[in-house]
Length: 308
Image 1 (cartoon, one colour):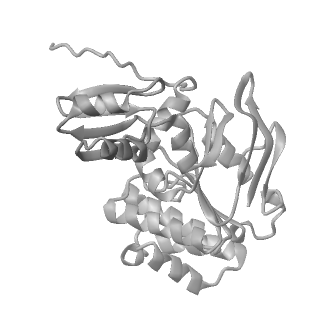
Image 2 (tube, one colour):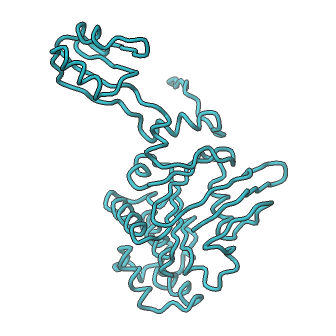
Image 3 (cartoon, one colour):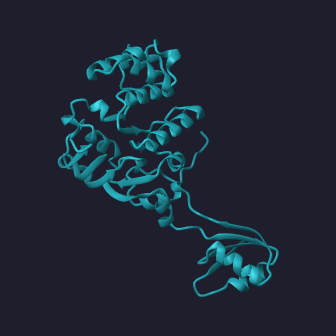
């Protein structure tokens, strides 16, 4: 378990993390989300002792990271896939880490095979592609067989097979009762992997909830209804809290009434329906809505390109 309590980090007059409190619990995958500059990387660095908090506390399995005698066996982390000496082979890199914790050679061989690195184990890491570097970083995170896994952008640079491997790996680790923390900008992938979400913006907590609740909070887009008798249906559904708009001649979007009530009402009036689809928001849409006011680095939406 990772417990963050009133965590603050300042660099001069800039506050990167501001009184942040949340808990990452075992048995689930927790997505750690936020725009660029939100303080995610700084928070993750403080979790494993690379940065010291200005105030507040952060513990890993009830202790500060530095208090663990064998920290790799408590938490395995990937914050930067390229943090490997380029002249070392994948095997040599993992063996060096293993020696610091008394981890046996057979465990090194296990994570090399698990990460799909067997064919390149004796190649120098400096020649690795971004995807192979990611696999090596994940192998290093798993080396101590830790109870907690914390990964920053683990699918960056991976091909579809690699993305699926990471997805199944993290889900499997959570199913074993381990604590999994995942930071990513890929909302579609996070929606498939994560059970819980911690969302921050400008260093502050914006949301700590399940994926389902987070999306529900953002609200739906109504229910799309297709019928050959749109005017009769419009009249049947009309009410003080119901808004009905048209998308084309035979389609309506109904706000203020769920699909069950729409279907029952249509049946009571003998109105045929050939589509009844709730228009829910995606995780990406919900995230963009929540963080719209805390985006520190925002692109222009009105860029004009002119021919030279």
